Amino acid sequence: MYDMDAAESSGATLREMETRQRPRGRRRQRRRHSLLAIAAFLAVVVGGGCATYQQVTVPELPPQQRVRMRLAAEELARNIAFASGSQGHLNGRFVEARGDSAVFVLTSSTGFSQVVLPVDAILQLERREAAQGRSFLLSVGLVGGVAALAYFGFEGSQGSDTGGDEDSVDALVPLVRFTIPVGR
Image (tube, rainbow, N blue to C red; front, side):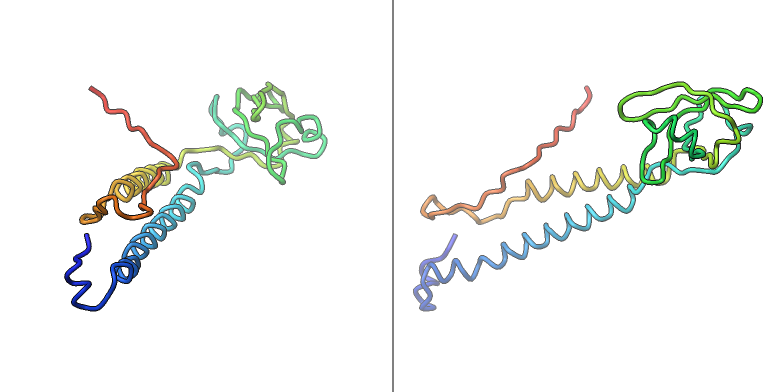
C-alpha cells in the first residue's frame, strides 16, 4: 500500500513510487530463478546415474543379474534391435551359463528376447549395481527442489494489497502442480 501523504510531501507521484518499488520484486524474481537454476543443475549432476557398472566375466554373474555388454560385430548385427547408444551396448539380464555360451534376456524400449551368445563374442560385460549414495542424493535433491518450488510458489508478499485500483496485478500462475499424498 502506498502512502499518498508521503508521495505529496516528497513531490513524487504515485506512478514514480510504484516504479521505485518494482526492482525489489525483480530482485526476488531473479533470486527465485537463480535458485531454480542451481537446483536444476544439482539434479542433473547428482542424477547423472543411479547405477554403476563393474566389469565382470560370465562365471562371476549370478542369475537375474542386470548387465550391459558390447558384442563382436557379427553378434551385434544379429541383435541390433536391442542395441542402444552410439557404442552399440546391449542391456539385459543374465540367465545362465552353458559351457562356452551364455543365455541372456536382452531388453529394449520396445521389447525383449532370450538369446544364447557365445562367450568369446562378448567383448565387454558389465554388471549393473545400484549406486545407493547417488540415489539418496538424487532423492534429497528432488525433495528439496519440490520444497523450494512450494516455498517460492506459495510465498506471498505482505503489504501488496492493491485495493483493486491498478491496471495489472502480478500473479504467479503455476505451470506444474504437484500433489503429495498423505497417508492416514
